[in-house]
Length: 93
Length: 190
Image (cartoon, rainbow over all chains, first blue to last red; front, side, top):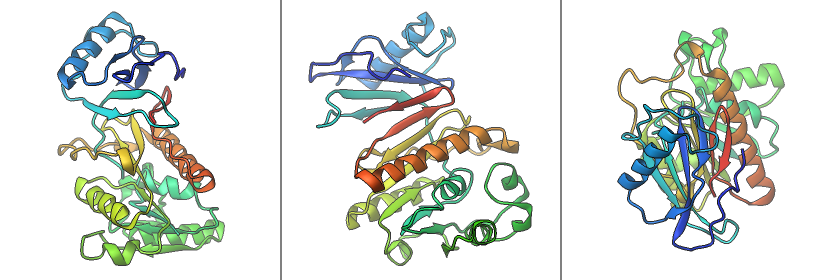
């Protein structure tokens, strides 16, 4: 999967990775790193409805209400902020 | 010593993939092997009703001639120092937030690296996340059990292999990559 689609150069912006229905992909455009969870879920819902996420099939029933947002700030070897909207993962065993 | 906490669907296959590490393995699990486990975990019918850590050790000895340290107890705040001491890497494959928090705190207090593995209920998503950026999710609801009848076994094995590769990468290079995984591919988060 292409992991370098979104050129993020602004320290206040981030790549948004969306995981849905066993598929995942990055939003084509960077988003503000401090965007609220609710707003991120709204953006993701609209994008998946429209089929705008490379790697995720369009789905008009997509719903991210129970999903979780992780925030990963940039560091020396990964020089862009990352946001991840994902399903809950309560299991290991 | 590499310590794997929880040797069920994820942890048993991580152990399988890491069995050749020169550092050696320790496995911790208080649970026993049930019939349903045989469908999705690296446990066999010969191990039914036996403790999972003991069962895995015996299987490794019999199949591969590999010796594994065994802790057949539940990890608690009372025994954490005793059962985790001597670890140079922790691999968390547990299924409850209490155990995850004990592991995370012990790793931080003792400055031992820790790799956490976590799966979604529908068996289509896994997180393989280093301690510095790991946040444990609440446990699933009753009836939300994953891997019923072994239906997600291929994905669990993929997640376990990815986790083992990440552990090996760290042991060789000291680099930490946190990863998300679905059946359709992986993304390195950081």
